[in-house]
Length: 202
Image (tube, rainbow, N blue to C red; front, side, top):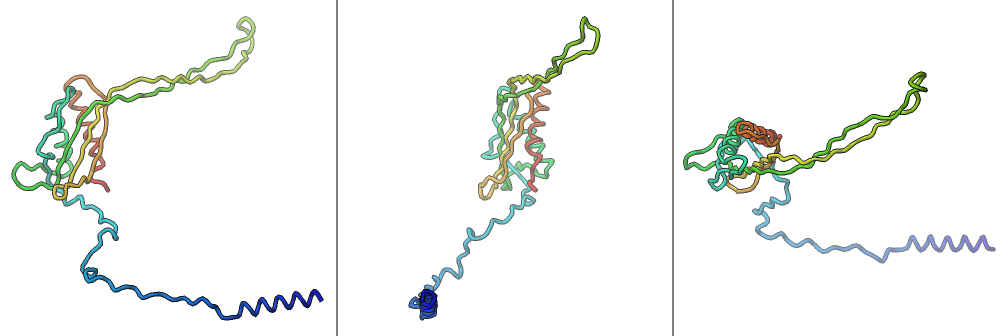
């Protein structure tokens, strides 16, 4: 009797599943597009085109100002180093009233860095009785960490599109602080060349 009841319940459930679905999918039609949709271009819907750095041929200092000098180096040294680095990359300075393709700014500053040096010292072990016989014991490495401060020269170079005013490239690099005037000029050139080494970006 129990088996017949189970079969009856199963058949009733199956019949209920085969009945009509009372839920019917309906949708409203989409509203018509506004008239300006056919002529409006949404730039935000597309990725930005890659920048063509090859079209930049000329440059001028941003706002007509040379890089600021410091107690460590004067303005002319920084300006000359940046100008030479730009010239090596096919960018020519403008000295007339024609519009430039790029505006360039440069900044030189001194910063302090904390450096750490690890020295490994070896020790341990001992000899035999009264210096005779085989020696015994072990040897261990003892790391010694020394921390010191170092003054470095940091050069920051920034470039801006002359038409839009948007920043298009920026980089900085550092080099050691050297003493004599000729060594300082070499340090500035070295730092500028490091900063400009990645221009134009690939």
